Image 1 (tube, one colour):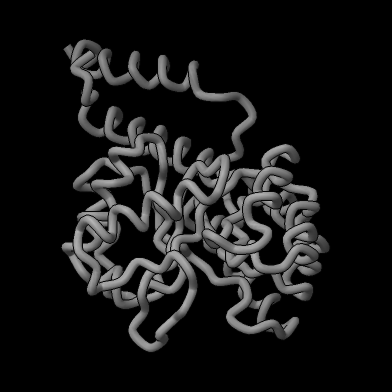
Image 2: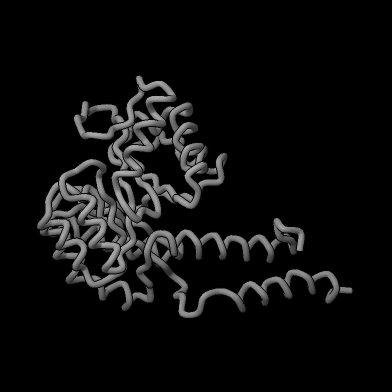
Length: 265
């Protein structure tokens, strides 16, 4: 009787484990370099980092399209670094989605921003401490991403009041939150401290996402210290891989706890 009770979840666990990609470490991490597109030299430095770093480009910037093409050819994952209106800054960043926009204006600008960067797999927000608080605009954004199909969203968490994840869930948009900013300033001791927090986060929870910026000190630090991740048993992966594996593992947890899957198998 006991065997019958647990036979179904055990079989499902074995099947999912069998089809999981080989070689995944228990702990995964991703690093996003955003604010790319305005400087050719710094963009090339980011592309040349010897690891699966994910690169996020600002729309309609001078070098974004060419750099994204080169990064894609080099095997890097590409994101759109989407400008959203903030509370304290009146940014003139081209392509910014703003609170006063109508739904039609918002959708038109978003489409233009997405089309300006080739090869994108996902989006994260540039600024956005105002717009990510507003349910209506986040509903518009996630609805549009769902219609695009296949794009994920990373909340840069520029405010603790963000409702982006709530509406990503509503529209079934794959999403995660940023855990660590590696360079809130560019002092070596600050980057060292935040990189250590990044490692500890991945070790403690199994996953971590860090965002950094294309500053020479930051890029050189990342290049010099990537080996620490492997030493700690952490595999650096593109953001899309981290989301996929995290979702698979959460599915396994659900199977183990309930003995069922959403598909009814």
